[in-house]
Length: 240
Ligand code: SF4
Ligand code: SF4
Image 1 (cartoon, rainbow, N blue to C red):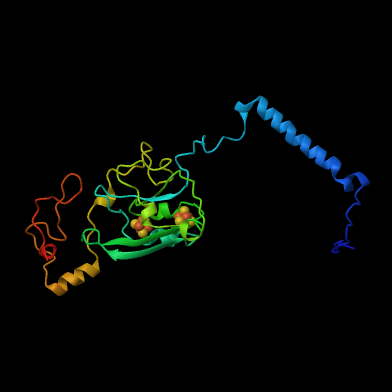
Image 2 (cartoon, rainbow, N blue to C red):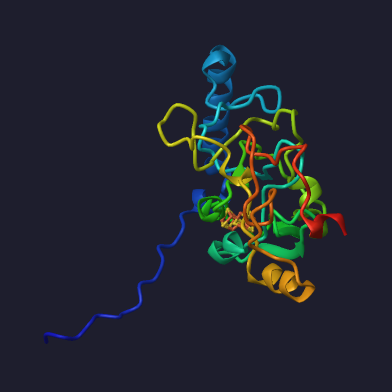
């Protein structure tokens, strides 16, 4: 009759006497192992495996390995603690605590920036989400931990040391030299116009936000490198 599914139980086939001994199957398995062993000894150069860690595979420039927090020329983090990477993270493994930056041009910075490497799925969404080019990935895949605490990488483990090469080279990042997508300059070194919170503080202190003499908070002059000029007169708030 149509619509009826046959759900009768299928009994497993009974093993023969030889199969119940297991010995013939063990001998067959050992034969495969010995065949591969001899083949590899004869043609050791064609081994499908590599002698890690003496030899390493050359991974792509887009490899998604351990993250790094990029830095400005003065060694400070480019991150402005905007939380966009944490919002984009599907594994919810980024923890950020924002603090007020002593340099008013940057406004915020991460007091805490942790990535739980045991939860991270190395998707790179955080790198894509970052508006400041502050979070990149590397080709470093050697992360072994003895306990959970070691797997949580803080700023000390994530920060890129200025002038020092990154272990195993750069991996996934938004811009690549020569592919036409590289930004013309370091956008993250541009001054950030203070947000409403800072304006409110200045208003409370009676500081004029729109004065035109000298590089005030909203009309800072920049030299060619994108930094404030050293000899520029200071804003009254900077003196206090
Ligand atoms: S790579 Fe993916 S999972 Fe890992 S921290 Fe970034 S967004 Fe989260
Ligand atoms: S998205 Fe970039 S700038 Fe924003 S908190 Fe994450 S790393 Fe920092």
